[in-house]
Image (cartoon, rainbow, N blue to C red; front, side, top):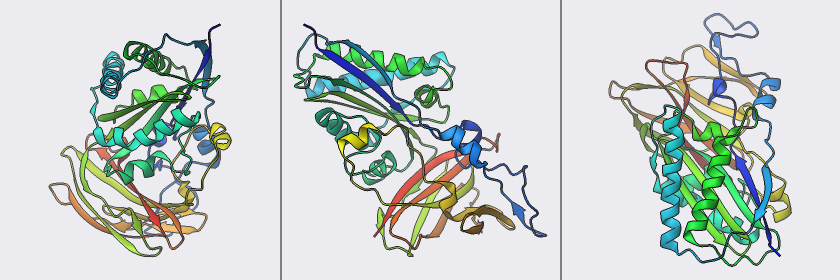
Length: 353
């Protein structure tokens, strides 16, 4: 009798592109700013809830493919072929190709091996860590967005799979993701995001099945990241150079609680992930900042001035949150030709302890 395998898919569901990544609209105002001050409007709570609502994982069963045991070299070859599949889908949508990003792949390898061995699917790990911090800890300097798919053998004791059948399986995963229909199309949006320039693929085979992560990155700046650990209430320095044709639209520091260990059962109940809530914003800098502020539950956060020279270079000292936890340092940019097309070019997670 054939064993059964369950394929699960998870995707990053952030705010809709119209809010990506800062989601302020300078033309929309609420309240009455004081003279000489300009209020930057955030999405309403209903807009945020609708746009970031978790998407249920897709599930279906299929017979186990014939056995075999793909070697590490063969798994690496399949990972590269997944990039080719992604670029075929991007080309069909009129988008530029993404290139292999080894740092992004490295960020996911331990995580997908844990999923395949333990038998779960989640953007979180047993340590409670999310993709943003995993990417920071391996030296990532860009923004990263994650898609995941896992094939779990329901009876356990999975022995392996041949290279050809592994490719067949992950190709089906890719096809399912890119063919999603709105509003449950988070994977597709990630694959077809025009801002992505790179992707790292990590595939793992374990005793409970096969796990794959697609880590998309935006590489439009050369950045010198802050340290990965610091004391609460301290300061860190962020410097870098934006590529020609782009402008800095903001640098933000947003606090989040430190991750806590999660059980397998808890991980199986998770769905999409997001950045920290913007209500936790505690620092904001932008060029020509005078008079701009963002209202949060803790009070108004006034923009500090950021100087960017003609070559796109900048250096900024950022005060950290005063509480133990995580501080997300986010660099937002936009094309010179379209200042409203804002997106993250860099995101770094600093653990405060």
